[in-house]
Length: 390
Image 1 (cartoon, rainbow, N blue to C red):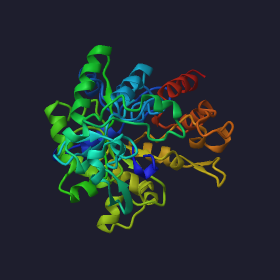
Image 2 (image 1 turned 90 degrees about the vertical axis):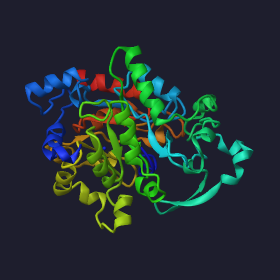
Image 3 (image 1 turned 180 degrees about the vertical axis):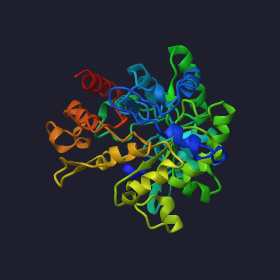
Image 4 (image 1 turned 30 degrees about the vertical axis):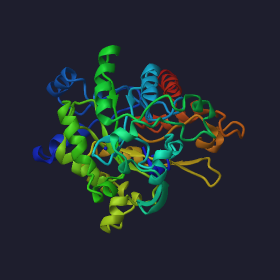
């Protein structure tokens, strides 16, 4: 997941029908009902089970398990699996100058690596306009992969997670290809299929730089045999046209990420499309999305709105509207710390203090969402057990 939070997705040649079939996974909180024939379900089972094999609500480890380790590191990814996350969001994908894909929250890496401590890269600090916002720092596209491998990851939000700073400098920046290899190794080691959920970051921005993301993603997925309908790799993006492009290149499940209702996807801004996220979550907009994707990843505020004081207000019709057209919903992002919780679930005022995360999980699960991104996979799994068995 990415900036749209400020936080935080198949192939047309075989037609929308196949896509709609996979997208017909309308999943309840206690179990899964995949909209496939008996024969198709048997085929899914032989090839890893597909989306229907995932527990519901699905617990997705956000950037690994970012509540406990610096995000997008193998330390964070491994811990998410150790905790039992159903899927690991291994990979917000940004390109290097020499065309490799690396896993970083944003192309600007000053806040997530120790690049500022490397005098040899001091002159690379610059200001760029990233999706309309002037951003100062160091950017992945200005470094070769070899140069980035000399850096080490650090905690992005130390004020909220001072305990994570203990691990600053321990892990390097992973590449997407390393993640794909890690996925296979972990699947063998753990005796169960490991799922990942990479995101294309700022695809319009990078395409204008000659560093198109979708083709690079598709090439690596094809190389590793993970570009199929049943492959345990879900792709996501905040830019609908990136998902449409991927839909022509791979058969993977695809998810459109949705930020605040009044915002516009950056590809819409660039192309002059006047629609906002509010337009995309209408029945008409959701039907359009269902023509090329299998799910949406809305911000939690699109599922339950908030009052001015930050407390929860009204449940929207988004869950039922999306399910009517066969889309699953994986909203973002649940975190344990007070500042990130709805006001009524906060306990105290400490920026790094935990609130009633279990209460918040229960409230969101009750809406019928199919899963959720969380920085605290262990909390999410316990909350799911309470909800399903309660």
